[in-house]
Amino acid sequence: MTSWFDTAGSSSVSNQNAALPATVPAPRSAADTATSPIADPATIASLAAPAAAPSAAARTVAAADTGRARAASAVQAATASVDQVRKAAEERARAVEAARAAGATGALQSASAGGAVSIVTGRVTSGFGSRWGTQHMGLDIAAPIGTPIHVPLAGTVISSGPASGFGMWVRVRHSDGTVTVYGHINRSLVSVGQKVAAGQQIAEVGNRGQSTGPHLHIEVVDPSGTKINPKPWLDANGFRYT
Image (cartoon, rainbow, N blue to C red; front, side):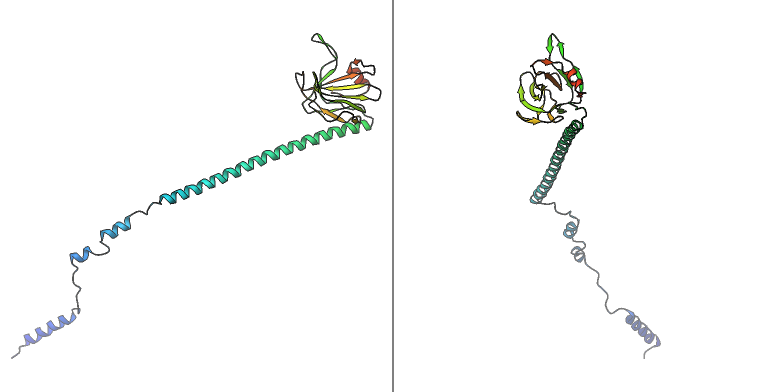
């Protein structure tokens, strides 16, 4: 005979068993945990290790590239510097030539217009006559090296080049036989036998020969061959020299 308790109890147990899941995951063993990818020491070490340093060959290549870049930069800088120096020199040369041309042109225009010819622009530092126990046979006019020198009258060049004491000189004979002399010049712009016009540039002020500073030494020799005081002759003819 089955009792109510047995029936009810059996039914209750069955219902509880039905509520349980069909399978229950088994607990993981210590061995399983030890071999897990997360807990594997080798994996952890590989993840934590820093990136490998570049090889010696790679470092050599990088250093060579850097050296080439620096060398190229240095070459470019040197080239730019040379170009700047060359351009500056060319500009100075053009300026000097322009100044010379302007000086010669101005003197020629003045002569052709009947005005006074400017032989040189400077300052008289020594006159004709006795000086330091010797006879100074000309007029000294101080001016910077390269200052244009113009001939006051038309004539023919009879000397151009080296000269004792003067270093370099130019001598011009004019139509009346008078000779003008230009000493200590830096450079002659004429040659022997050349015809020159009044006001034409014939030379540049220099500091050659027995000279204590850049200046023009000008002498005047009259038709008889006598050296005369240049100042009265220049003043009488209206030639400027300062």
